[in-house]
Image (tube, rainbow, N blue to C red):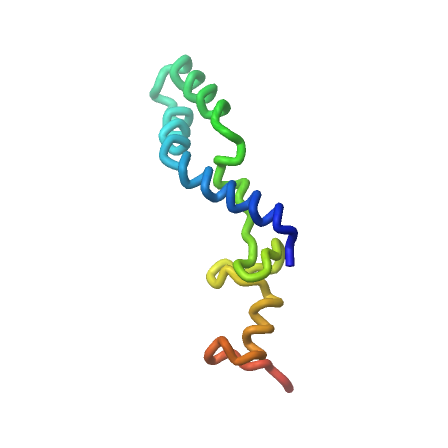
Amino acid sequence: MAKLSSINKNNKRIKLSDRFFNKRSKLKKVVMDKKIPLEERFKAQQKLSKLPRNSAKIRVMNRCQITGRPHGVYRKLKISRIALRQLGLQGKIPGLVKSSW
């Protein structure tokens, strides 16, 4: 089980990134558009840098929904490899069988 503080910090980042997503994307479009004058693009870049750092989508960590483990997490399932194995052994995931040869 991961530290509760790191799980809470990541949840806060997720909420911030969702809240500022539209604002960030609009400012990024202005910054990247070469047709817009340099001064306006520079002002948009300054506004973008004044937004909270944790509102960036890249700062969000993939964590297991069950244990909070940060590594070895399957994106589709949002579960770590260890939690997936335990659920499979308990028979809680239909069709998943421990392989042996």
